[in-house]
Image (cartoon, rainbow, N blue to C red; front, top):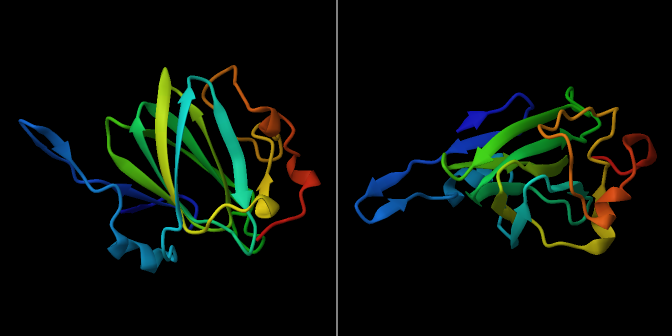
Length: 177
């Protein structure tokens, strides 16, 4: 378990067991979750995305705010978490980390962060477990390329959903933690 530069973000290095059949590793272990404030897994999401796809920056507000465990099952992504906790010394700071299926790791993102990722391989399959069920009325987002946040995305061109293309900039959102 490695604490990242923003308090609350944790990267789990997964112990991989290889043999002649293939490999095995735990994507997460419930024993570690309560101390991080995760609680129970309420929903498991999966995405398949092509190279240059950006998903995010998304978050859920109360009462359905979500902590996330993010794991890449195939390919690689540049994963980003933006601190939206008003009282945090790292408010509006972001951390980006490469997650790849070739080096098994799981990223923990607590409640209070916007999350997004960019696919850097030909495609990526991403599994993420969340601590609360999805609720459209609690869904929020920030433009992935907002200059005030200044995420340094690794690629030059990006593919976004129509919904993500319309996300507001930081100055136009009101819902923080």
